[in-house]
Length: 202
Image (cartoon, rainbow, N blue to C red; front, top):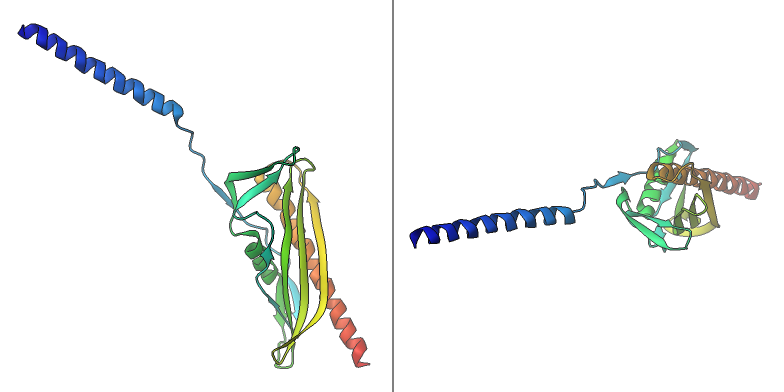
């Protein structure tokens, strides 16, 4: 009787070990392989020096759903959210920081003009069908004198660039070119504002 009980105990123990091992194998099969999340920033902005003029950027806003995660539009007009490739900041803050880093001021005095630039991102798109990224922005430039703001310029435009291959690094490269185009466009806008002021004084 005792031997039979010992045999039964061995069988139960062995069965338990086999079930535990099998369960562990099945659990391992259900596990997804680990994928590290990668963060991306825009490239270093160009350096634009403005003489005797201050430029202040109010944080941009956005009506686009894109946040930290990269968002793609595919051939079926489906929006795909990438959980593993993200921007270092939400696009409005990232673009604002890029613009602030681009414009340098020199020779500032108490009489220097201050320009205030603000805007909204209405498109921050990575289109996998057209292999194009697009940055759509509406922005305004105002002057500030004695706490009084005056609208000097308004613009709504879209900057687009093709990317060489489909991949986060290529998306970032193309979007950085769009941001660079925006810097050069704002530089041109400011030059026009200065030219108009000079004409008004004559």
